[in-house]
Image (cartoon, rainbow over all chains, first blue to last red; front, top):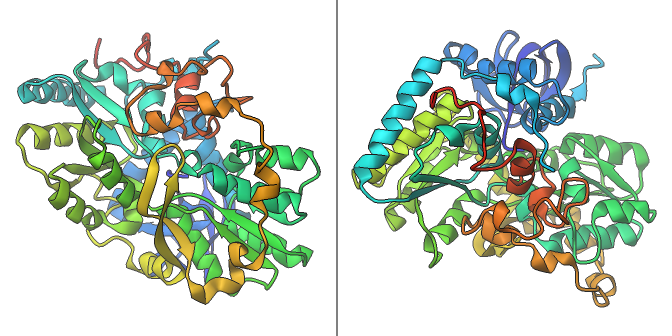
Length: 96
Length: 384
């Protein structure tokens, strides 16, 4: 619950955004994020809500941790990777 | 039997040279402090996961204790709060909550036990899913809302989105800054500084810690979740302790600003008011609990349902929970390995205490990653 997960915004439709998390597309709500969000931006998702737009200069550094964890921790037993996966799963499926 | 994940050993710091440099610096700074041991506390389950996951403790100076404080939102949800959810479920009300909550023991049983006895419990990943579910079913649905600032903001946003009339909130949300005051004031506390969690501070901003620092003369460093972020945060914290310079330092500027997310704060405080209340095993925490404001009474499960705790709890047999030392562990006074139940009666499939339930609980993290200090070769890249 403490760790948000970054994703790339594909499409914005009012207060809903379609966001790509390593190939998984989900719908993320935009009521909470404090800056305008548009396609191409990266956001930090927390339980289905974007809580921050990630500045473009910081995207690589932000993604690195998650890529390490997801690539190297294939087991379901890995708590941190499991939390990240459940955050990704947490968002609604993109049915748009 | 302690499980070890073979993948852990393969994981290296992305930048071993920088990790080694930070680790060496940390050793020097802690030596300079000139007292042993030096104890600092973090208040975030994800920090503990990263520390355990990457074997960071093996790279720390032996005289530096990094303690996990009350940073697991599931763990600090108090027994009577779980009881309220269980009582509602047994009264036939449908409950939706985050997955980690369902196994947390209450006085008599967990929500999972209530489910096994016919209670309607739905696991959701987001409050938005609970609202969708309420729309589909039409019957009353109570969202058992747990977690710190980051999830409380999502609950607040859902409340402000005109949820259907059959959607209710049972708020067990907690607010982190006040509990740091409690830990700082505990007579037995050894904590000389705090590592604050990056994503919660994304909401509150790092400025929220300034009054705490002024009152308690203890430094606070906001840190990210990368192993290198955490090491860099610890170096900064040790420097502030060494220099006797209590201040707030932001070591996670890519996510955290001084003011935080003002739009999120506005929604949070429009929906919730802080009140005092117990945190499981810790203490009464003034302003530590978030409850719905009167304006949202029509959504508040506590005001819309007659929650009968007496019928549930009056004949409860004494439970193993009595022997659980989760509270002392979360206060940083004891470690999981000090607990007689740890790894014996209390294991992830049948947890006694909340710290063994949640993926962010100290006991579950230590149990899975092999605990401390027996870290073997884990991640000890800079120590070699």
